[in-house]
Length: 394
Ligand code: FEO
Image 1: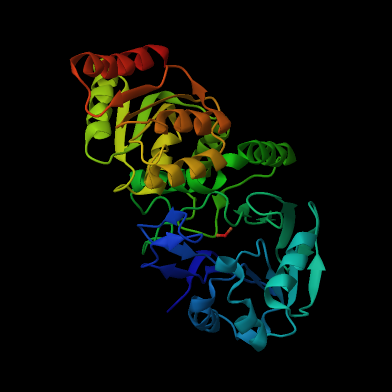
Image 2 (image 1 turned 90 degrees about the vertical axis):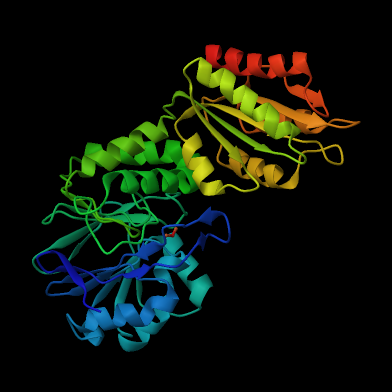
């Protein structure tokens, strides 16, 4: 149950949630689990930065107890009110009711609306400082990264940034640091996190990173509130974020489809062949059987999206419809697209896919390809040509 010292006198006292498989309702599949990272700073003023999800409140309390008596906590910094970080606060504040909370104005308002408690709360703004004794904390408001209340906390003496959700990953591990874990898995989870949660907020994130760079504050460690702590190379995740915020892509296409009786699937494989024959990095997913969050991660660095569906009741099938609604909400920029699908008597799927892609900001670069029942010889060639033409344009 022990906490873990990440720097002299600063402890990770969070919880590993090995078995969670869905996050944010069912919008995010956490197939590697997650962690809720909470940090205890044992200075003259005992300070906790962020808490954990309510089911892990006892674990948090037990870990703190091994370091200091919980009732001795003076300050609790609430970087973000979302339940996965604030859920343990009611249990914790029953033990240390005099602890003073620090957060943004939106944090104060949101915390009250979640827990209806009149905790001692001090509103802080960017640049405000809090002296803990040997160390200071400086607060940096970070609205919409990813909620209006969000805030980062920086400790200058330790050159430590505590940015809550930003730079995090849903990644349950026994290791706590980037140099201890598998680098590919770590970046894979960081990309999945950005793609599924932060993608639509790219402009805000880019501005915030720029603001922090202008502050000229050295950052030797980034300790987010999910997953692994970046100590070996914090610049690696900052640079990855900068690339993602710019919507930088590579010559890669992701085909996502849903099929009723195999015709649309057949089309998808022929289109993929056309792309691959032209040297395009290609990924192909049947959305009805694929992990949607992983598909989004694959789309994060792909220039092209090719979406297909059979027609059912004059529209696309339901899994691809849900997926496209989610994709539209992520507002991908600088992407090229095309649609395809099979129909029986009246079509509808292809034009409706095109409409959603356009509404989501994807530029259509090839006419939609609709095929009656199974593709014949000419239509098979047309599918292949769609892949080739698409490859030539990306
Ligand atoms: Fe990890 Fe926005 O909560």
